[in-house]
Image (cartoon, rainbow, N blue to C red; front, side):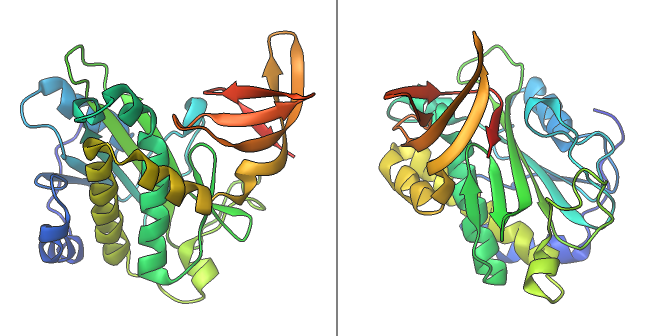
Amino acid sequence: MGPDPAPLPPDLADAIEGARVRLGLLASTVLYFPVIGSTNDVAAAVAARGGGCEGVVVVADEQTAGRGRRGREWFSPPGSGLYVSTVLMPGRARHQPARATMLLTLSAGVALAEAVETATALRVDLKWPNDLFVARRKLAGILAEAAGVERAPQPIVLGYGINISPMAYPPALRDRATSLETEAGHPVDRALVLVESLAAVARRYDELLDGRFDAILDAWRLRAPSAVGARVTWAGSAGPVAGVTAGVDDDGALRVSVDGRVERIVAGEITWL
């Protein structure tokens, strides 16, 4: 698993303890690292060991090999963001476990948007499948990955990164990324953001396990204006395909209208125009 975890900083420890009643299964164990390669990798290693891994939370102050969707690097400098992963098992949902697993990323998006709004009063938009935006700039991202463990229900590592403080973004991100403090115009309490994010994820996770999928989808659709009427392109089997978004279906797939028909996008690279 790499380096040993360090003691949880007092501000984070106190905040988690104060919110314990709202965290459900989450954060019964919290592993904190000042520096780590990837919180998702640490969480996956925990899941591989089995036995009580559900709800384990990994927090880092810096990632040297953080990653986003499709293997992209997630810029994770020290002291600037919140980098968190937790082990969940949506496959043990009481109803339609496969659907619960498919909706995990959208559920987490709703939860993080709610958490940011609670902690900062900033209005957050969601973009399919896993990004949070404020004022057209990316604030946070989500990465759900199978833990690589062959057992049922399969552990899923849910990782997320939230930009807290202004940072020196790489040139490719300079015009596309933002942070809570940049948008709010004042310092933001990272401990508050952490506990509100964990509490919101726990609440929406309970909805997944209970089969309350409509509540999650309705909340996601309300926060995702680009899911309807936005122009997108992607690589089809015969070359580039262009269309207009037409919402998400009940399994969380993006629907795109193309020349009078509707394509269903489950995965892959979408370019938003």
